[in-house]
Each structure stands twice: as structure tokens, then as C-alpha cells.
Length: 335
Image (tube, rainbow, N blue to C red; front, side, top):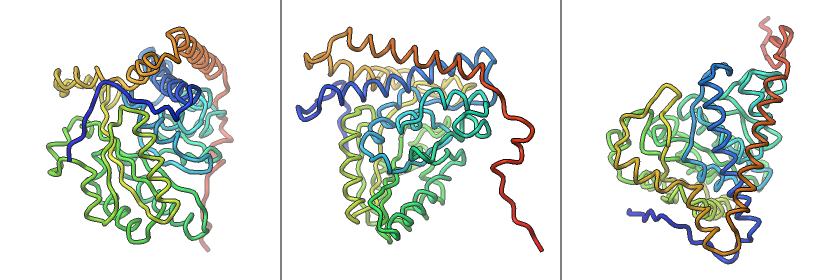
């Protein structure tokens, strides 16, 4: 199953200028947020640890742009872009990363557990593959209550070798659940190449084993990701789910902040870095004639100010108190 990866985005006339600029702004927000957080960690001013996703912005933004406000997503140990794409603000995420009580998880989750149920994002689950069965369970709830909602479940290609993936996809398949399994295939599970762990050339082929539809998409083309997700969501809403989407993308950073990614081949890096998802959309917008460089610079500057404001607020905000240790904790009394 071959897929063409080009250095351009063909944009249909059906998409408005404001919609396309909205996609661009959300991707820029994801990238600038990640870049600023990396510097904060290098300064030693932010606690915990981080796993970043620079280069994968089109998958997060394209998927979430195709969802309704009341649809849900589940995420991974690499959740920042997913959160921004689903509507969480840089400020509430930055507060969480600084461990402050006003953070989206009240300062108790940190980088790997951000989320906001009111905005359709379950707090991220750091266990590899851990969100996949949860997404299937949520989709079952939607079906039993006759809701039109869907769940988009993000995970990396490494998670598809976990038992949780196979059990959850099989369960979702036999019950035709409204869940979109979104595999962000960035070619490496931590530092191990996909080709060394999985024999099928295209991960979407695994859908055949469960009798569901699978599709491989250029994960750096935000428009193609949006269109594929929109179709998958419609199928799920009409009882034709689940769907497995494989989004081909690439991390521009290592697995974690201490990983220099020396295992990435230089020619491979050059190929994928030339296909930066933000640059692809920017060039397409400029070539369309409806957008000029000043428009994009204005967006870049506005996003940068938003993120700096978030850092300022997060630095000054109060930490949780000792009393907060016993809030949001549930226990069963044994008698």
C-alpha cells in the first residue's frame, strides 16, 4: 500500500480563508508552545519531564478540527499538541506544567496527564497503549446511550504491538463502536525503528484482521488529515465504525528531552524536515494568493505573545497547598 508524500498541499476552493488560517494558527501555537517549554526545561525552571511532538502538528490539528465540540479524544505521554488542538489554552496547560493549582489538572498531572473533560479531552494517559481500551469503553457508552458522539484515540505506532491495542480494536470492531483509532506513525517507538518491530509495511493493514476500514494518510498534510478524519467520523456516527487511521509523520525532536535522536538517519531527517507541516500549509496559503507573508507574521507574533503571557501567569500563580493532597482522591471504605 503505497502513499505519495509530496512537498505541497492542494487546497480545495471549498475551504474558506479563515478556516485555513485557523488551521495554521493552531499548528503554530502547538509548535511555539513546545519550543518555549523546551527552553523552560533547559533553564531548569519547570518541574517534571516532557515528551515533545514538534513536527507532528498536522496530525493533532487536522484530527481535532474534524471533530465536534462534544466529541472526545484520548492522548498519550506526548499530549501538548493534542490538548491545544482540542481547545485547551496555552495558559491552562502552562500552569499545569509548572505544577500550579490553576492548571488544567490542578497541578497534579504535569506534562503527561493534561486534559479537560469539559473540552472533550480525557486527561492524557502515559502508559503506552493505555488510552486505547478507554476510548473503546467511551465509544460503547456513546452507543448504548444513542449519542452521536465519537472518540478519537491518539497513539504511536509502538502501541500497536501492545495487547491493549489488539483487544480494544477487536472489541470495538465486533460492536461497531464509534471510535477512530489514530496512529501517529513517526517511524520510531522511542529509539526503535518501526521496521524492526512490525512486519506489515503499512500499519493501516492491521485493520483487515478485525474487519474494519484502515487508511494511511500523509500525516504532515493537515488538509488530508482533516478530510480523512471527517470521513471516519461520519462513518462512526452512522454505525460504520470503528476506523483505523495511520498518519505518517516525523518527530523533529528525540523521544524525551534527554534524547539527541542520533538513531535518526541524516537523509531521513532531511526528507522529513523538508516536509515540515507548518511550512507546507504556509507555502500553500501564500501560493493561493489569498494570504500574504504579513498575514502569517501577524499570526506568529500574536501566538508568541499569547505564550509569553501564559508563561508570565504560570510563573506567578500559587502552588497547590497541603490540603490539596486529599482533594480529588477517592477511596472505598472496607467494613
